[in-house]
Amino acid sequence: MDYNQILSRFDISELNEMQQASLKAIVEPNDVTLISPTGSGKTLAFLLPVLQLLNDKSDEVQVLIIVPSRELALQIEKVFKQMGTKFKINSCYGGHSVRVEENNLQHPPTILVGTPGRIGHHIRRKNLNLKKTHLLILDEFDKSLALGFEEDMSYIFGSLKNIDKNFLSIFLAPKS
Image (tube, rainbow, N blue to C red; front, side, top):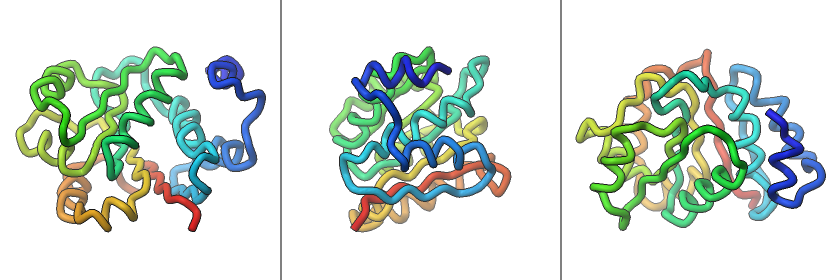
């Protein structure tokens, strides 16, 4: 993957220190925590290295990104699409047509981003198969808990059978 080509789509000439560190850290099988102020490039910091971990021959959800809000889901989806990769991304969130989401999940994206309530809904209705999901990203997980999504998040975590010590989870939080 040519990162320079992707960065040029964002009018960025080079990665910042946090983004460079995330490229190195994400290839190791461990948990990664990025703490940085809003607007510092955390979305690119986790999306760029994720590209190294995707299998272009798989037709199932490989990466699940859980976010507390529709706005954050849409932002991540927009950034990923702007990167211009060959991989598909979809988002699921309250206020969005469940029927559209169900149709999208019939041809699963490589990356699925959504709120805990809606992701949990699709798992319960068997619209979403997470058997091949090997990467979990929790963006602003503290806000998801503060908004009362603890039960949905626990249910989702229990559905992720391929996430263990041999795989990677990324926890993102804004810098206080």
